[in-house]
Length: 338
Image (cartoon, rainbow, N blue to C red; front, top):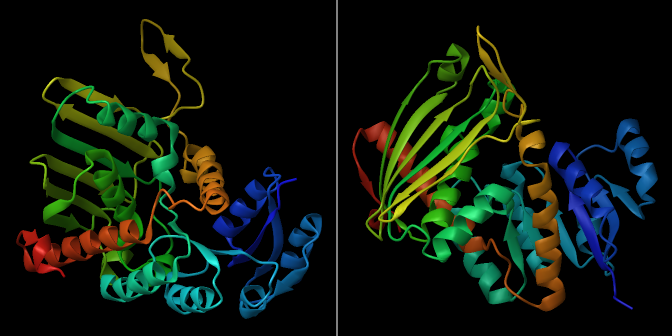
């Protein structure tokens, strides 16, 4: 009989609840409890079907509980450092939503702490587990198109977030583009050597008033010689736009948007197809389930997680370099960021 792994979730907003729902499907997971800043009537009602032992506003109750073997950190980024340190001190495995922290130097300190502890740590870069992007990585690993020359990543949201979100997000590069920085490393199989970013406020003037941008082009040069281009926008009127293309010496690989159906209507007047799936919970829903499964398998097998604390650290370094490039108007060399 397989022993169930006790889980505690810190932060049960949209992502925390999503993970909790997925845990229902895993026979080797026991969700012990959840923590949030306020235990509201609505939270208590939501938690009832889970039959939780703990519903609290003090995450230390979860971390100190001997039944809890792993902590899912789904709270705001500015809380991550303290929670990670406490979880490591109590020898808990950690799944942490991105970014690990708002500054790569803080994450580096956590990196060293985690590596010394021997715990399993996974970062919530769920796009690595998307069926399309995972296939691209497999094809690259199998040398299907040879040496990569150009990697193009398009990531555009269907609508901008509210100002309250922008204020606490850490900026577009840290909040949104960071997924694409991780994908660039993942697909290329190489580290980034240089970063150049240009940005503008073309979607919502209030975003600019908060000191951020809503539209960006980032170019990358990889250690393996390939070039990368990432384009980001906070608003694509037609839906959630998530595409990748890799040009290599022997051909190319491309990923188009997922759509609700592949039905195409062709008439004399027009050709019509479905819009892309509207947002990330539609587009990437399966990837969230797979990443939880992979984390649990790592714990059960005593194996490193597929997305380590190093991956989180490197993506944050690139985000920092992109911000510096935007501010300084020049190429940033990653070896200057140590």
